[in-house]
Length: 239
Length: 351
Image 1 (cartoon, each protein chain N blue to C red):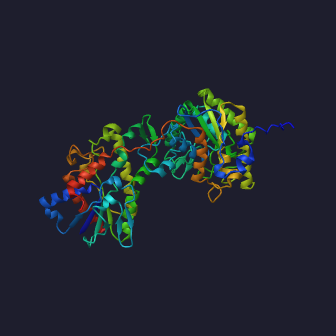
Image 2: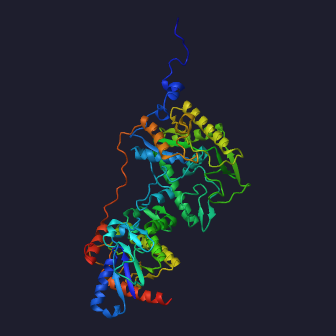
Image 3: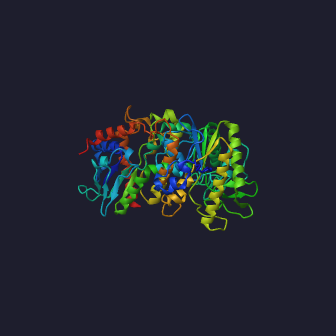
């Protein structure tokens, strides 16, 4: 199976996880070729970053162009699956400190109410371009799938300000909405293994990259996601 | 021979058609308005009204007036269209368009607990909408509880608008509306148009005359000045014609009635009350000397160019000394830097 992975900076842990597996458990990668070519930082994903051409997607975002100019890549032919690390990264929505003044539907307290419709719109605004990107890939006859980004880490600076419960709720709402869309479109999803998520929906501490990084996982996380990816695609291929 | 004496001898040039209009290019017609009282940076300014009032509020904010916004857009709602779709950045609170003085009056009464319409919510798709803000969100509220919580917060914000505004700019839009037979509650949008169900037995058509408009405006002024005794008002009439009329008349004829009625009531109150002024946005856009140049091809919408022209006349008279409102500066994106670092570490620098 030949897989090309692209997307946001969470491709970084995937790349390092892949290197870890190649070093320590190459048998798990036997018969598979995995190429990871990032677009760039996820902060640019909510804005137009590509144009669909007749036979390829042309990356138009200048920063992204430095790493990826088009898909499919002429130097990576015969790809079976295109993994997109982008549709399930929620930090752009939950990280705003101003959430502390608001209240989600069903929460107690006197925060400014935020309706489910507004929360849904935040997700849609955040992912509109990514959704178009995945549909455009599929429109070229390619097979895209989604790779879940990490759940929030407890050490994220938004957590003490906004509150762990609210961060977890926003994260869960976001993922649920995007999972529904991905399911409706028939795009497979590589989920985070349940063992890596605690009871409240946060990443377990062992997956944390380091003290200075609030939202990327480490290479162990990347390796677990690569393994989960191969399992998910094997299942999707049989379906 | 003695000089002729009559009341028009000493009128200002702006009061003389030949000198004010006929001898000028339409865009050179000036001196449309002289203020009754100043509005400057020491005054907190609020707006409400029909859709044209959105432009006025936005321009006042941009020009650096101390604009009252009690329901500011959350920082996490970044998309401009979404801000509009959810009723932010339009008025001093998220009331949406307030088309008639009766609606304005009832908004005040609801905010201060003096009126509670019997119509509480309308079922819509899988949720509910507020009959008095049916389009404030693009999708229905998911539950009655969610709607009521949003409404309670909103009405608290409306109270704050009336408590804090020194000057309230209200744009009169319509004389027509539909009201609940049961209690007279007026709807901004007729039941059944965007949500709800029209029931001829439960809903009645209203087309207010000048006396009713005047009475409702007076009632708002008096009620508001009990909350804030020094509040002053600037009335305008929207130059946007009716989209449709339920009167059975031709829509142009109905528009003429509506605008004339509103204009007459506003003019009478301007003459009558020292704390009420009238700004002639309606005339600047729609009067014959302007040759309909500011209307969009549908002859209803007002072009941004027209809005600019109107507001230039306003700002020629009311100039804030404060700096124009700065755009919302985003916080430095620390996570973007972390992402770049992650990519550099994993993939090296871009080729």
